Length: 175
Image 1 (cartoon, rainbow, N blue to C red):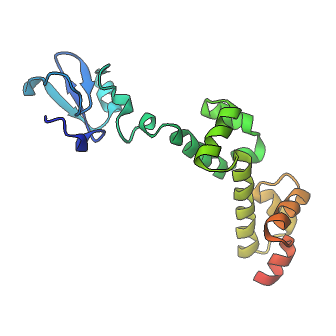
Image 2 (cartoon, helix red, strand yellow; image 1 turned 60 degrees about the horizontal axis):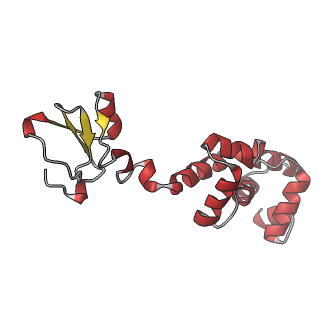
Image 3 (cartoon, one colour; image 1 turned 135 degrees about the vertical axis):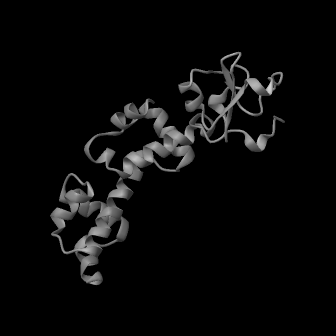
Protein backbone atom coordinates (compact mmCIF):
# COMPACT_ATOMS: atom_id res chain seq x y z
CA UNK A 1 0.00 0.00 0.00
CA UNK A 2 1.67 3.25 -1.12
CA UNK A 3 -0.72 5.99 0.13
CA UNK A 4 -1.66 6.86 -3.43
CA UNK A 5 -4.27 9.67 -3.47
CA UNK A 6 -5.69 8.28 -6.72
CA UNK A 7 -7.26 5.46 -4.70
CA UNK A 8 -8.66 7.67 -1.95
CA UNK A 9 -12.39 7.01 -1.63
CA UNK A 10 -12.32 4.11 -4.12
CA UNK A 11 -11.71 1.44 -1.48
CA UNK A 12 -11.03 1.15 2.24
CA UNK A 13 -8.40 -0.84 4.10
CA UNK A 14 -9.37 -2.77 7.23
CA UNK A 15 -6.85 -4.22 9.64
CA UNK A 16 -7.88 -7.47 11.36
CA UNK A 17 -5.64 -7.02 14.40
CA UNK A 18 -6.85 -3.52 15.31
CA UNK A 19 -10.47 -3.70 14.13
CA UNK A 20 -10.06 -0.33 12.38
CA UNK A 21 -10.55 0.64 8.76
CA UNK A 22 -8.77 3.48 6.97
CA UNK A 23 -8.48 5.35 3.72
CA UNK A 24 -5.61 4.31 1.45
CA UNK A 25 -3.89 7.65 2.20
CA UNK A 26 -3.84 7.20 5.99
CA UNK A 27 -0.46 8.25 7.45
CA UNK A 28 -0.33 5.48 10.10
CA UNK A 29 2.33 2.77 10.13
CA UNK A 30 1.63 0.21 7.42
CA UNK A 31 0.06 -3.03 8.73
CA UNK A 32 1.30 -6.48 7.76
CA UNK A 33 -0.22 -7.62 4.48
CA UNK A 34 -1.65 -10.76 6.06
CA UNK A 35 -3.74 -8.59 8.45
CA UNK A 36 -5.30 -6.43 5.72
CA UNK A 37 -8.74 -6.78 4.11
CA UNK A 38 -10.01 -4.44 1.38
CA UNK A 39 -13.59 -3.18 1.21
CA UNK A 40 -15.31 -1.24 -1.60
CA UNK A 41 -17.03 1.18 0.80
CA UNK A 42 -16.92 2.43 4.36
CA UNK A 43 -20.35 0.90 4.92
CA UNK A 44 -19.06 -2.54 3.93
CA UNK A 45 -16.15 -2.24 6.38
CA UNK A 46 -18.48 -1.15 9.17
CA UNK A 47 -20.89 -3.97 8.38
CA UNK A 48 -17.98 -6.39 8.78
CA UNK A 49 -17.40 -5.00 12.29
CA UNK A 50 -14.61 -2.48 11.76
CA UNK A 51 -14.65 1.03 13.19
CA UNK A 52 -13.40 4.15 11.38
CA UNK A 53 -9.88 5.47 11.93
CA UNK A 54 -9.78 8.66 13.98
CA UNK A 55 -6.71 9.89 12.12
CA UNK A 56 -7.68 9.69 8.43
CA UNK A 57 -11.43 10.00 9.06
CA UNK A 58 -12.87 7.69 6.35
CA UNK A 59 -16.23 9.50 6.45
CA UNK A 60 -14.53 12.43 4.70
CA UNK A 61 -13.13 10.39 1.83
CA UNK A 62 -13.70 11.66 -1.71
CA UNK A 63 -17.09 10.75 -3.17
CA UNK A 64 -18.70 10.53 0.27
CA UNK A 65 -21.54 12.82 1.30
CA UNK A 66 -19.31 14.57 3.85
CA UNK A 67 -16.64 15.18 1.21
CA UNK A 68 -19.20 16.84 -1.06
CA UNK A 69 -20.15 19.05 1.89
CA UNK A 70 -23.15 21.32 1.69
CA UNK A 71 -23.61 20.54 -2.01
CA UNK A 72 -25.01 17.16 -0.90
CA UNK A 73 -27.78 18.89 1.06
CA UNK A 74 -28.61 21.16 -1.87
CA UNK A 75 -28.65 18.21 -4.30
CA UNK A 76 -31.05 16.30 -2.04
CA UNK A 77 -33.24 19.39 -1.71
CA UNK A 78 -33.33 19.90 -5.49
CA UNK A 79 -34.36 16.27 -5.98
CA UNK A 80 -37.15 16.64 -3.40
CA UNK A 81 -38.32 19.91 -4.96
CA UNK A 82 -38.42 18.29 -8.41
CA UNK A 83 -40.55 15.52 -6.89
CA UNK A 84 -42.99 18.16 -5.61
CA UNK A 85 -41.92 18.58 -1.98
CA UNK A 86 -42.78 22.30 -1.99
CA UNK A 87 -46.06 21.80 -3.86
CA UNK A 88 -47.83 20.53 -0.74
CA UNK A 89 -45.76 22.00 2.11
CA UNK A 90 -43.40 24.87 2.82
CA UNK A 91 -39.67 25.49 2.99
CA UNK A 92 -39.71 24.84 6.76
CA UNK A 93 -40.93 21.28 6.18
CA UNK A 94 -38.36 20.71 3.43
CA UNK A 95 -35.58 21.97 5.69
CA UNK A 96 -36.76 19.70 8.51
CA UNK A 97 -36.68 16.70 6.14
CA UNK A 98 -33.08 17.60 5.30
CA UNK A 99 -32.10 18.11 8.95
CA UNK A 100 -31.25 21.81 8.64
CA UNK A 101 -32.98 25.08 9.46
CA UNK A 102 -34.98 27.01 6.85
CA UNK A 103 -32.63 30.02 7.03
CA UNK A 104 -29.58 27.80 6.56
CA UNK A 105 -31.25 26.07 3.61
CA UNK A 106 -31.90 29.49 2.08
CA UNK A 107 -28.23 30.43 2.51
CA UNK A 108 -27.10 27.15 0.92
CA UNK A 109 -29.40 27.73 -2.05
CA UNK A 110 -28.12 31.29 -2.44
CA UNK A 111 -24.53 30.03 -2.49
CA UNK A 112 -24.94 26.93 -4.68
CA UNK A 113 -27.99 27.67 -6.85
CA UNK A 114 -28.33 31.45 -6.85
CA UNK A 115 -32.06 31.28 -6.11
CA UNK A 116 -34.26 30.44 -3.14
CA UNK A 117 -35.94 27.04 -2.71
CA UNK A 118 -39.29 28.72 -3.46
CA UNK A 119 -37.94 30.18 -6.71
CA UNK A 120 -36.61 26.78 -7.75
CA UNK A 121 -39.97 25.17 -6.96
CA UNK A 122 -41.85 27.84 -8.93
CA UNK A 123 -39.58 27.27 -11.94
CA UNK A 124 -40.07 23.50 -11.70
CA UNK A 125 -43.86 23.94 -11.55
CA UNK A 126 -43.87 26.24 -14.58
CA UNK A 127 -41.69 23.82 -16.54
CA UNK A 128 -44.04 20.95 -15.68
CA UNK A 129 -47.00 23.07 -16.76
CA UNK A 130 -45.33 24.03 -20.04
CA UNK A 131 -44.66 20.36 -20.83
CA UNK A 132 -48.30 19.53 -20.08
CA UNK A 133 -49.45 22.43 -22.27
CA UNK A 134 -47.22 21.36 -25.15
CA UNK A 135 -47.80 17.62 -24.94
CA UNK A 136 -51.52 17.34 -24.32
CA UNK A 137 -54.94 18.87 -24.46
CA UNK A 138 -55.85 18.95 -20.77
CA UNK A 139 -57.90 21.91 -19.53
CA UNK A 140 -55.85 24.77 -18.07
CA UNK A 141 -57.28 24.17 -14.58
CA UNK A 142 -56.19 20.52 -14.69
CA UNK A 143 -52.69 21.50 -15.87
CA UNK A 144 -52.38 23.96 -12.98
CA UNK A 145 -53.24 21.26 -10.44
CA UNK A 146 -51.00 18.61 -12.01
CA UNK A 147 -48.08 21.02 -12.24
CA UNK A 148 -48.35 21.69 -8.49
CA UNK A 149 -50.00 25.11 -8.36
CA UNK A 150 -52.53 25.63 -5.58
CA UNK A 151 -54.83 27.71 -7.76
CA UNK A 152 -55.42 28.54 -11.41
CA UNK A 153 -55.01 32.21 -10.60
CA UNK A 154 -51.47 31.66 -9.25
CA UNK A 155 -50.65 29.49 -12.24
CA UNK A 156 -51.84 32.16 -14.68
CA UNK A 157 -49.94 34.91 -12.82
CA UNK A 158 -46.66 32.95 -12.66
CA UNK A 159 -46.91 31.83 -16.27
CA UNK A 160 -47.75 35.34 -17.52
CA UNK A 161 -44.91 36.86 -15.50
CA UNK A 162 -42.37 34.45 -17.00
CA UNK A 163 -43.58 34.19 -20.61
CA UNK A 164 -45.32 37.55 -21.00
CA UNK A 165 -48.56 35.87 -22.07
CA UNK A 166 -51.20 33.63 -20.48
CA UNK A 167 -50.96 29.84 -20.83
CA UNK A 168 -53.94 29.76 -23.21
CA UNK A 169 -52.04 32.01 -25.67
CA UNK A 170 -49.06 29.67 -25.59
CA UNK A 171 -51.31 26.71 -26.24
CA UNK A 172 -52.75 28.38 -29.36
CA UNK A 173 -49.25 28.99 -30.77
CA UNK A 174 -48.10 25.43 -30.01
CA UNK A 175 -51.18 23.74 -31.47
